[in-house]
Length: 286
Image 1 (cartoon, helix red, strand yellow):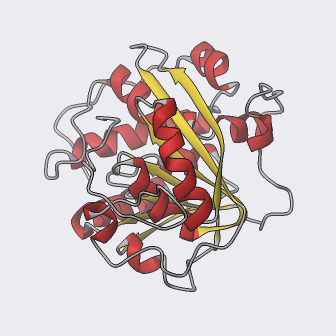
Image 2 (cartoon, one colour):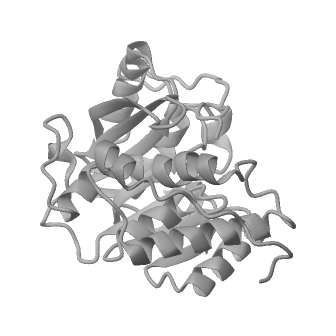
């Protein structure tokens, strides 16, 4: 890959990293972040990868935002003491080695690629159904020599029923994919017992949590363990991360056939499922 002009350098912001996530990237990780930025800008010339190209905006909305969802994991590896409300979300030492994560609907590689760079001992699968974008991401992974990341072209509804993937992941990440009820149906079938699903959201209301909880608990084998509310460090935009623990096997009915979760998001008003239509538009608008 080559470009006609030299891209701007990403900001380092070591103090912001430390103040907000309790972690700082190493020199080698900062170099990889810069190479990732340059690769995305170059790929943007042929593919519609992202509208976020300004270096400061890219740092906040792609790098920082991606890593905000694994804050407690970063603090665990950096020996920082986690804040009381998230320390219970640190990795379970009984989990597999390497720690297996999957990024559903990775698009241009977010949040999966920054997480793979920040957590080199993890194995991160980047899942997307769009082959053209994922082919580019695969080339970028090879170019940057991110050995702990692999790409997978498939539909999440299909791999959720495949024993190779079903209940095989310690951590499942869902960012900028759709409504929460859609995301949990995609994510929880892939989470192993005791593992976590992390849903990245923009705005989030207590009423939404009350609607989501019975779907998570009664149908999908999860428990909404924590909702982290915070603001992005530059623009002070609202962000929420939902941490859902896998506490029981997901019913074999889920995920439903390709396209059905998005068309008829799960809702539960009693002990019987009652699908309803909802706008699956992404609420993070990234």
